[in-house]
Every structure is written in C-alpha cells, then in structure tokens.
Image 1 (cartoon, rainbow, N blue to C red):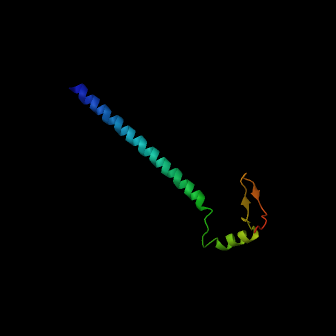
Image 2: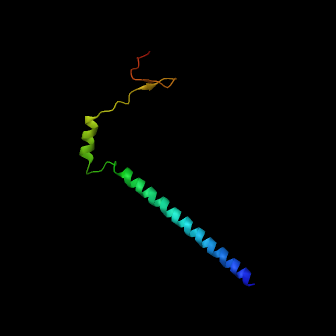
Image 3: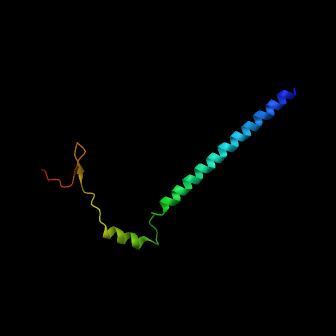
Length: 82
C-alpha cells in the first residue's frame, strides 16, 4: 500500500516538474518573440520620425518598374508592343 502511495507521489512530482519545464519553455519563447518585435519596431515609421523617413525616401528613390521573363531574368526596359 505504501509503495503505491510512493509511486503515485513520484508520478505527481514528475508531472509537476514536466509542467514547470513546459511553462519555462513557453515563457522563454514569448520573451524571444517580444525581443524580436522590439527589434523590428525600430524600423517602424512614427510621427516622430516621419519627416526623416520621407527625406530618406526622396534621397534614395527606388524603381520597381521591371518585368521578369519566363527564365527568371529581370528585364529593366520593356518594349511597347501592340
């Protein structure tokens, strides 16, 4: 009878330890996600840096007007076809 109680207590302790480890892993993953979001937030455009970002965009224009042919090559100039 006592061995059964000890085995039950042992299983309960193992389950508690496993739950605690899962909780710690969950917390570590959430902390990692928060740190990643904080790092990404550095690039967000806000009211405070809006003028600076507009200036950067005007100083460094990007041209996305291009095509990709069937072989995957980028074609910068396309001929007008009728």
